[in-house]
Image 1 (spheres, rainbow, N blue to C red):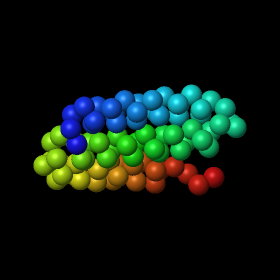
Image 2: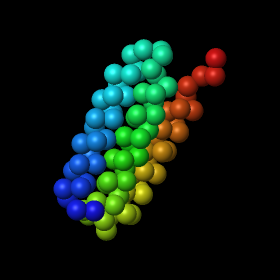
Image 3: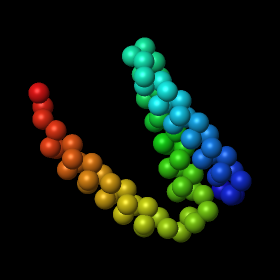
Length: 81
């Protein structure tokens, strides 16, 4: 991807994140807001992995694995009430 296209994807992802945060304030719009957030994150990750600096896959995979491990450890501490 070229830098201009990557920047446009990042801007679109940011707009979707903002829409997601705004939609989470109401119970009726929360489901749609979650999908905005999921779509925004998918676009941001895709732009990061396919954009400039494509040769750093190993670093991206290591950071994704570390984030997944931290998330798993924190989620395992949450009680099942």
